Length: 377
Image (cartoon, rainbow, N blue to C red; front, side, top):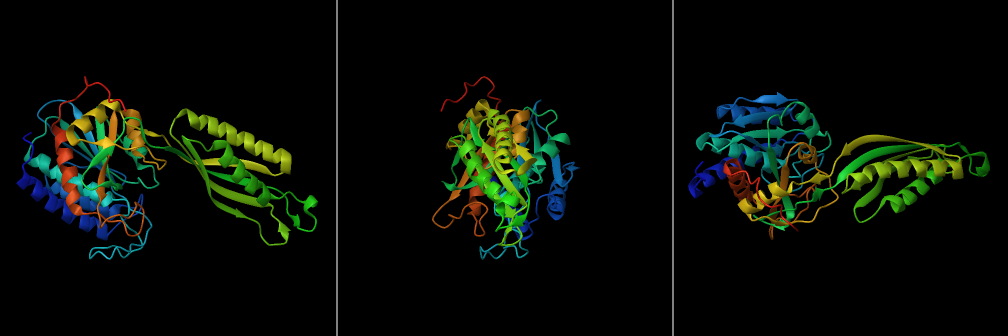
């Protein structure tokens, strides 16, 4: 495939801007991307693609000149955030593309259009994934066969901490793994004037919050309790408490150890206070560990620099567990655009999508760098 010239890239950017604004104005939450999915399907079928749905996600493929298949992924869902950007195409529904997924999708649709004009070297699987923001959509897309026959997968994520138009990644853990879990503590109610007749679930919950953070926090781990509900009145010993918690980790081995330590902590609290506890795991995402050779390819194509890993989670990690993968940050920070991801004022200079489109194009035509030495950081 001839690398697209500046004129074609400019035309593709114009297309991406239109797509981004259309999607931005009508955001949909995780698992509810019905209109978004129909919009993407119409665009792809209008380009001549055959499209397959997996729930509200979509998969299609650009046929290449030679064998082998790589995958490119974009996420499509929005967040329950009331937008305050003041943009003429701002959403007014109490939902918002505050994580840049409208930009990710627009760049991948522009790449899809490019591949109808310039045939890529290898087959390119285009994955428009639903449910990144809480549904664990990647896992379900994989179960639906989106990675069948794929040898590598790549994705970009907009980054307001990185200078506009620059790329960064690393060849280790880019995003942390996460275990989201609930704890229910059961004690015994009594009048506060006779506390010995009860078993204070609220006090036990306070112990759990403090002691779990001390036991599980560290350089490569993070423990957080985000919600605690307990008690019924100011003069009654609380009989029950409910906690919603998140444990984040950079090394897979930390998960089993954390579960064991939490069990020990609940047993210890029961012995000390008489309050019993039960833990229910709601979701587990693995750490997103990039493949060193895929990172080397990304750096060769984009000049990507180094970015340390962070404790936020990304379900692209499920793809990376199955095939060699690389997620790369694409910077959007300039004097005007400084708001963090997930904020109600997040926005970006749409011209930055030119870099993402060009990078998707190069990935579609790049030689497999299977013999490259892993990048050492």
